[in-house]
Amino acid sequence: MSNVEPMRELKELDVFRDLSACGQQMLECGMQLNQFHELQTIIHKDDSVAGAYVVVRGRLRVYSISPGGNEATLYFINPGEVCILALNCIFNNLHYPAWVQTEADTCVGVIPSLTYRTLFQTEPSIQNLTVHALSVLVFRLMEELEEIHQLNLNARLAKFILMRGEGSGQVQMTQSELAAHLGTTREVIAKLLRKMVAAKAVKTLRGSIVIEKPELLARLASASDTIG
Image (tube, rainbow, N blue to C red; front, side, top):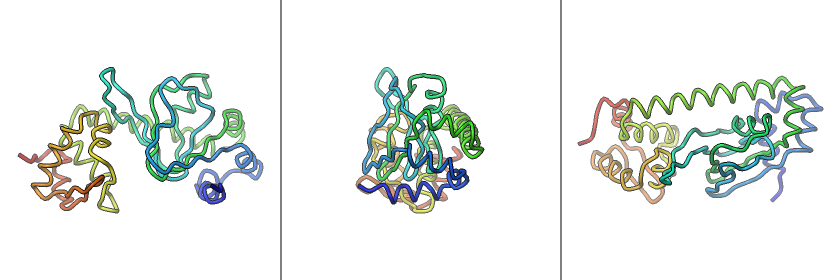
């Protein structure tokens, strides 16, 4: 498949529009664009990474796996963002400390380690991208920890459905994928969703959830209400 369209999408991202002509040339010569049409784990824990991972389209999920085999999402990487854990690996010669999974229809650019380090030294936009990635990582991890400690699972599920369904009113995820994100089992998610369906807060379809009463989900997400 041609890389013309993904490269055009990449150039439309703010950070790369601000590169110097030399920086843009380095990027075009060195970057490898990878397109994924379905869920796929592209980095495993303790892998060596070859460079910086930049999301051009779609989303990456960074997650951990407990000794018992349960998954839990650490954070997501959105279009225009770079994986700070991969940057830490290439700057400090470390192995990746978690797992990374693509969503469907995701395009990821991999900038070779040497190229990224050179761009970091010479390009203010790459420096800003790196600092932004670090601040976003800290914020998202703290937000996730706060939710785990302060919200019950019902509230976390409602908040996640609202967040992911914003705009479209629909969440394209299976119950197993929701369970993996929230660090629980599919059976628990199915039970919570059945209660939400009975209350007409959502409607479940094969592989997706449709939001019907966002105001009810918002009350659930604030942990001020429950569905009995």
